[in-house]
Length: 305
Ligand code: FAD
Ligand code: A2P
Image (cartoon, rainbow, N blue to C red; front, side, top):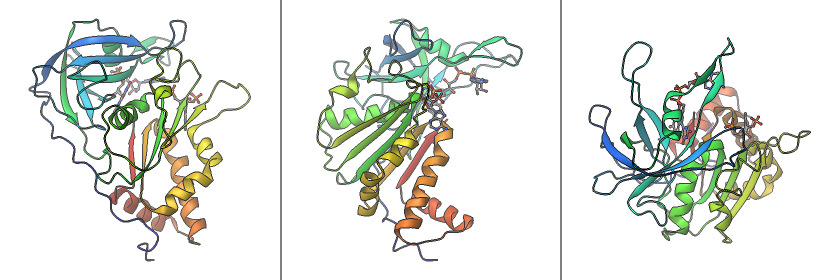
């Protein structure tokens, strides 16, 4: 089976920075600001945390992650391992906060099988940080989740929850730093409610300020209507025609970030598009090869956790 006629060509992505700080030589930086992204009365906690990079050599490319080394030891008495967080700001920092780096962190709290409340080590540490506190960080990490070099590439951003972080960095790079982009940018973003619609709610409306013909923003609120769960993949189906137009133009990158569970339905959407549009019937191994090729060509980029 020859896929060349169907597949888009290879697209070059912006080369990301090499890792500068490893767990053995982390960088100590201070908290500039730690603010809630959800209302006080909301059942969960998600924070926007700005860290100071002034007088450091820390450089990063949008789409990369930063490692955090939480203090203390694990149950075996070993220092806690680092946790990765997608960088939520463009390089240089948020508008009004030059030389900083921002994270979007959800406080992990859950009950184990014995009904005991367990608090995630690093997310609780980060969410409790105060202005001026010091944090040990590593990175930047990851090189595949990067913007295209070609500004005419249509972009499809698919996010759930804190998976929105790298897309905020991308969007801010376009909108606040005038990084050239001449093609469409679709953002499909899924959260539970309006209240936890990060950067697009009453607490922080960063995305709602971005008005431009290039930018299309679709919100999937899974629990706002108790009778109908709406996920990112449902909206993708709903707006199938617009997305299929983009796929047919063959100059796009699809980025997926957030919950692992959204990967499969999105990948099924793509498979169905290719089979229908190009009259293909792909066996499982053929589809796997096709899918791998889409990734190798940088047309499909996934960061789920
Ligand atoms: P830990 O102490 O490590 O505990 C987490 C563990 O608890 C899980 O592995 C799971 O086994 C268990 N657990 C968690 N919830 C439940 C539950 N409901 N029921 C049962 N068991 C459960 N997180 C963000 O908030 N923002 C980001 O931008 C972000 N970006 C990431 C980017 C990458 C590339 C990766 C790999 C991860 C990213 N994460 C992000 C996740 C982050 O790295 C941590 O895993 C997360 O904060 C939890 O760490 P913790 O130390 O608080 O929890
Ligand atoms: P829900 O939890 O209502 O099923 P979280 O708040 O846990 O970080 O999740 C972010 C959003 O992703 C929530 O709206 C959640 O919906 C939704 N979600 C959960 N599972 C999936 C999935 N398999 N595909 C797409 N979205 C999902």
